[in-house]
Length: 125
Image 1 (cartoon, helix red, strand yellow):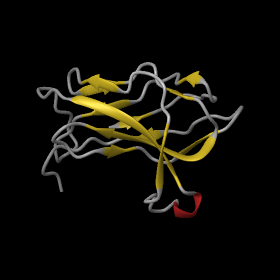
Image 2 (cartoon, helix red, strand yellow):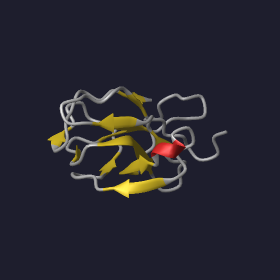
Image 3 (cartoon, rainbow, N blue to C red):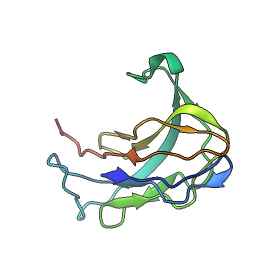
Image 4 (cartoon, rainbow, N blue to C red):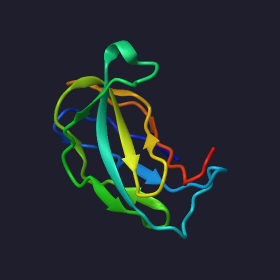
């Protein structure tokens, strides 16, 4: 499912909250399952933007683990404390495939673009 992020600056709580959704292989929301989802902030090496395989874990401030409710985990108080390029969120839940957001930058006085986060169930192809 997709997660739009509102404009933000370093040290500001995100104005629209990231949401990770549990989905079946057809990308339909699964509301009957419950899972603890953990958010991590990654920063890709600028030379590896296409693959984003060279990553650094970046401090993320706020409540990083949320229980799903009706198939969604909403992160209501996350904050990124430093400007930088090539950030992306990673969402993990026990026994499920992780989801990654698209790449985004955080610059002083600038705004985040739209993020898309997909949470796949186990066995998805």
